[in-house]
Length: 79
Image 1 (cartoon, one colour):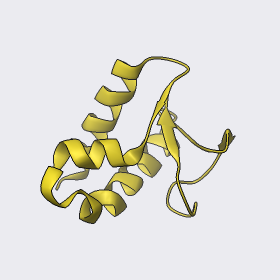
Image 2 (cartoon, helix red, strand yellow):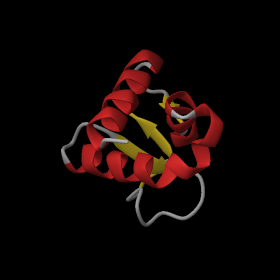
Image 3 (cartoon, helix red, strand yellow):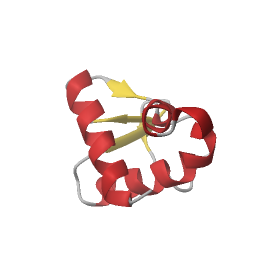
């Protein structure tokens, strides 16, 4: 799947959730590829890393900013 499509899905979902709230990357993967969403998770994290680097997305773990490509365990995506 193209990274731009994944980025657009992330932004659409975090904007719909609203400021001060977050989504799980698996929500994005499940929306884009319901049957095999786990296989899409590395692409979702990579797209989140790109958006974070552009200053368009916050990526947190336990309330602290993290790099989605190196963070281990669950992360959250928000505005």
